[in-house]
Length: 283
Image 1 (cartoon, rainbow, N blue to C red):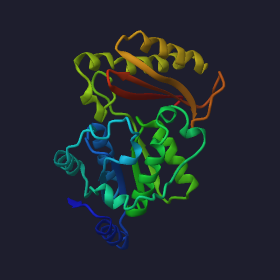
Image 2: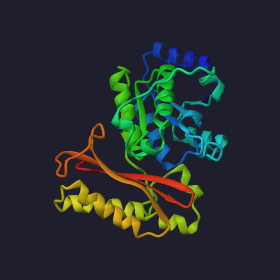
Image 3: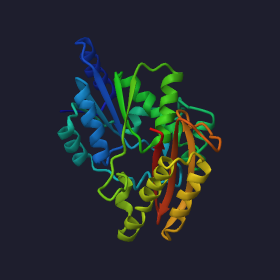
Image 4: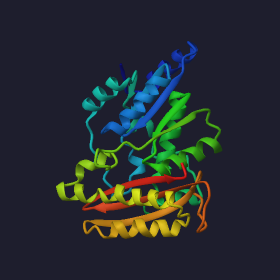
């Protein structure tokens, strides 16, 4: 396993791999690796000749009152986990190498897709996401890139960017990895105290309720969202930010009745910890 910290060094490794006709897979992460990340790295290693894992807590996707400084960091542990899962190169740049000057060039997806769900309360977040992903794509030139379905809006925004800017990369979206009791794996779960951790199980329970209603024939998304909202609202430690549903792909506002695929997504705070989760109906 190679630990690479600079753009030029990584580009040379990538060019040498390309010249040999080998395929390159990329797994972008912000570190604090858990089983969800490991599933991405494992799939990438299985399906590509060279697996690159980036570990970079991206400052430009955090708002001024968000948890950039407190975001969990464990580079040594992350490198061990990534190598064990099949990473060939771990890219750990500093912010100065990826954002070398005051005057930034941004890659920004516009429209309703970035104004709903998390974009409503995190107005600069997705501009930061698309900018760093575009940079990583340009540096690594991957054949395939791997993302988790838990960040459903991020997935749709990146998919749109790839299509609109003609990036020659195949996106692989991997299923949400959960604890045995259903809580979605997240780097922020460590912030939860014992009571909040137990309370947070309502997210999975409410989304299972949505799935059950759909399988029983309910096609009214407003009815489904109302059931999810009521279940979460009954949990006293949870503070709802949103419970919303959109058609896929593209996060299209839905009529009351729908056919095809729909995303039901939630964001809820437990104490100071903001958690997101989702389910896709009609998958």
